[in-house]
Length: 519
Image (cartoon, rainbow, N blue to C red; front, side):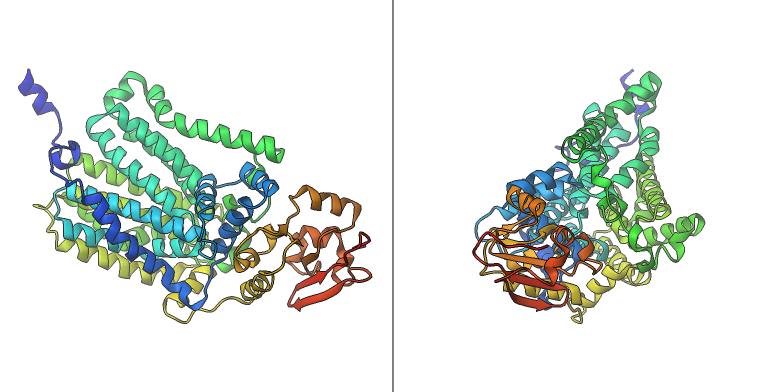
């Protein structure tokens, strides 16, 4: 009977199936983190040396500073925030003393991606590869253009990639051994993925039918719906918690999706700026073909893993690839995906799995970094063909020719002007890079503050200063102070002094008496 049972079990690479079968040094993770952290940090900060600052980075940094400085802003931002996890980590970094001038999202992205890359090294070594080639391969994959862009630009993909790394590893264990623990780990990682990145939410949505196929046959035969429910329960619980929080704090379960600039809408409001959506991503057929070509170009390790891996590994790799391709087509059809790199960033854990399942005896360790480097070069070329306007700005900054956009430059200049001023009324959430340029949110009076709310109702400001945009400018239409007091742009009342007037920004010093008006 034991011989029959042994013969019925598919071949399993011992290095990946049993933790103790392949000796992985205990110091490997710590050493990998110590080596990869400065590398990833250098690559991420290099484009910012010339002053480049992505709009997503400015927005995340602003939210972290506001949420940690004002109780009202904390309530409003955390109650309807999406994605949830990036803001949570950003606030934790923003509260560390001495890091006021360091972008909190950059620190979070670099640290999280370094942890994920260290896990990749462990996966490769556990699969039979030597330490040095594994380190080099993980470093190259972490520096892939799609990942490097999202780290430097303030995207939320690094958190999603870390969660997806756990999901990828759990998927292999689920297919090979049918472990209940693997099902639970897969479900929790998918829930974290959906809460980490809006693109990750689409990836989770696309993953549902593939998870049903991924479940072992004996589990499906016993209870298909029960097995799928076990995997999806953490995601269902997280979704209900998100909807409930938005209903309580935002008045609607979908408050996080309100507005055309909400994260869940992606590039829908800027379709014309995307060469992908205006080109191959605009039609479903071309999106499938171009998406498959992009996946193969960015992940040359993937077909190698499918060729040299065992049947269980090939099944998992095929399902994960189909999952990513489905998500790419889905996000293109909904005009979410302005840059395919937002989803191609999730190829890195799949590439690691593809290399790990080959083993040292079937794929030479020296070839593994070469294939990763080839994917990096091909990814750089492909990114230049299908990227959006923000991607183009980052690429110019990487080449040393990046410049701060005019609007961002003006916002940073205003922020520096406000550094020594306190008790300033400003709509910080719509102010772009003003708060990051100032370096702190303390001393700002925001529309979420009860004091300013009362002032706007009675149309009298009691602060020492007020900074506002031109109410008729495109950005000024979202400035709550400028819209509540439209005449304040031209006349702040008797005794008020205009102390700053550049671009579409003005700063008034208001008189000390209580008759300050903006009617």
